[in-house]
Image 1 (cartoon, one colour):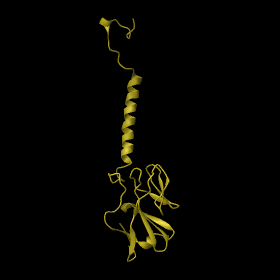
Image 2 (cartoon, one colour; image 1 turned 30 degrees about the vertical axis):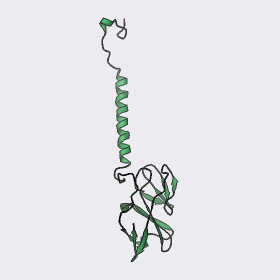
Image 3 (cartoon, one colour; image 1 turned 90 degrees about the horizontal axis):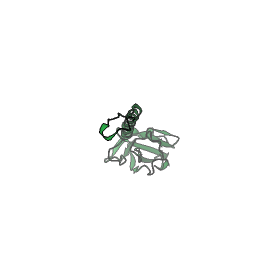
Image 4 (cartoon, helix red, strand yellow; image 1 turned 135 degrees about the horizontal axis):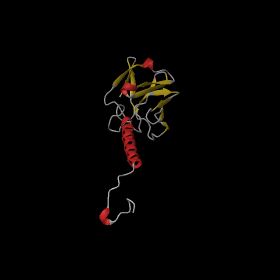
Length: 152
């Protein structure tokens, strides 16, 4: 009679195979790593509320001349992006991705890039160009006073 086929009065515990133990440990480590990865998507760059960062009060961003005509500038610290289609015509949007709350990290050829999951946004309209984000960047009121850009 083998160890797995014992009589009711002669049962003994058979420890799990080493492979089973190692698979379980690997699964736990993978789950813990996935949790850390997901947490990293929303820590430094997120407001914690899931809502895009929109200034509660007006914020001075810098000189209007910093935003090129026909281009845009990312004000990452303020979580805003400002574009200037024509001289004196500015538009501002939250630079916080509407998918997971990460702040855009760069603008390439008129597209704001989310570093966390690859969403892309048109920085002149806020429109989603590539997901996983599905909602556009919220527009933020913007004006120029004394040569300075004021958003919010």
